[in-house]
Length: 155
Image (cartoon, rainbow, N blue to C red; front, top):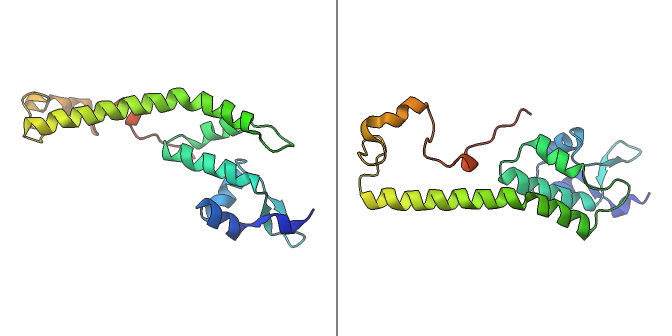
């Protein structure tokens, strides 16, 4: 294997925007792969940058690592993923993105309505939240569309 064609962990970090510790973690979790030099240093194939870009986009959407792993497991082993492979994954995520867009539009429209009201307080608002009745639902943004609620990872 020609290690000159591979990226060091520092080069991969610079190109991907992830810290070296994140790269080591993602490798440990099986999301990306690295080879080792005879001295034990990690080397990454350039194709791992595509996987890392996908991970970054998915994390930005709040996708849990386990779901990212399951999606990346759909990619072929033993060969570089093709455009068709990535398109298949892209199509599988289109519904999720459409839901997020719809939720953001609802949030935007709701903010327009609240700002138009003038009070800017859902605690005192007699229209949206009379007598602070929403407090019974518990903490957090009760009017935030479910698709925009924070997603929590187990790991």
